[in-house]
Amino acid sequence: GEDVEQSLFLSVREGDSSVINCTYTDSSSTYLYWYKQEPGAGLQLLTYIFSNMDMKQDQRLTVLLNKKDKHLSLRIADTQTGDSAIYFCAVFSGGYQKVTFGIGTKLQVIP
Amino acid sequence: DTAVSQTPKYLVTQMGNDKSIKCEQNLGHDTMYWYKQDSKKFLKIMFSYNNKELIINETVPNRFSPKSPDKAHLNLHINSLELGDSAVYFCASSQELAGGLAKNIQYFGAGTRLSVL
Image (cartoon, rainbow over all chains, first blue to last red; front, top):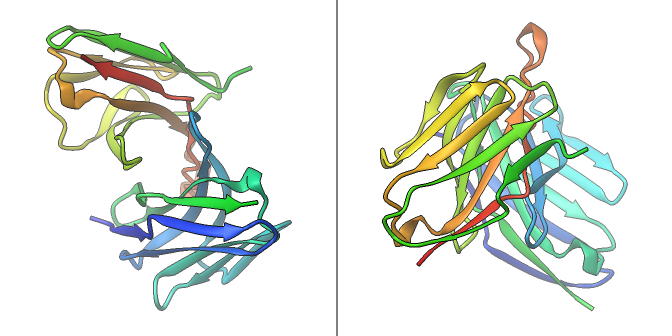
């Protein structure tokens, strides 16, 4: 099946940029997503990108997709303490017809 | 209005008991899911139903049985609870768009924290 990998932990200072990385294995992946999970809550969709795009920007969020390397990243500009959460990368694989989630990256923002 | 609602939010029970978690979505979605999130926050899909039919059934003990009375509800029944079942269980739903364009954006409930003593 599809494998989606992320690092477990990232710590940044308030005001800096955060970059969370994700790699996946299925080249037929069509939609790629970033979800945010705050403590005690469910996952909420932050943004998504279609596989024919290289970049998508939405306010402080920038998603970069490198299809050749099967690498997805989420950049958060001017990171705030409210951005502290777990960020999940997820990939919809056309080959497997399902969404696979990564293990989640815990972002800690230091004031 | 809550889009995907799960009850109960917390469930504390003894080993060996049988318990159910309910999930309802008011988004008109065709597909619903159950996920298990363990203490390390790993999220693992358990089941997926599309229009009341089971379409994904990952390697899950048969003590876990999903039941979908209609496409807006997907309940999870667990028999003979074990210590290792302690986790947060999330329900989610998604809508596959018409014309074969599937975004599969999933909307999650707030989770049910199950503690087996």
